[in-house]
Length: 200
Image (cartoon, rainbow, N blue to C red; front, top):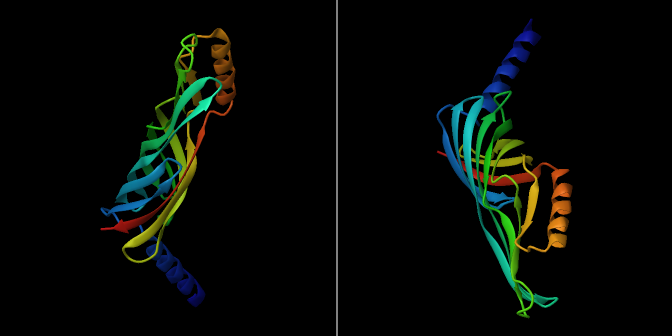
């Protein structure tokens, strides 16, 4: 009888300790990094088992100019997006599963300017096929102190990559089509993030 009482007390204490990380009505905000660049996250704990998050990512851009096969190429990589997620904590603890939607502002683009007037100018781009796409993640929000925690997620955005080109050459368009067929074989894009969160 005494052992049962001790075990029950221990279980209750463990659940209470885990629940401290997710108290109803808590707001939190934090900064971190993701596969789409630096991130700013805002969270609201609607209940011990449920929460909602908004994660704004971006601010990472790289551009370069170079010469290749008779063309002056101006290329750029821009990372960014907005994730809106609903979080479910199955055990009212630190582990969560999440689902929501991702609005992409990520692309790899290049402008090709011909050195000869006999050749056409054109552009090309790589981006998520669906700029608005579902996403699924799993992760945790682990307390460090009463106010600070570490938040991490791994998951996928349900959209393949798509290539496009303004080059009207049929051979080029055929190559773009072949490339997109290969991209369609992998209909998801990986997502990862980590952040330091302050709870108000």
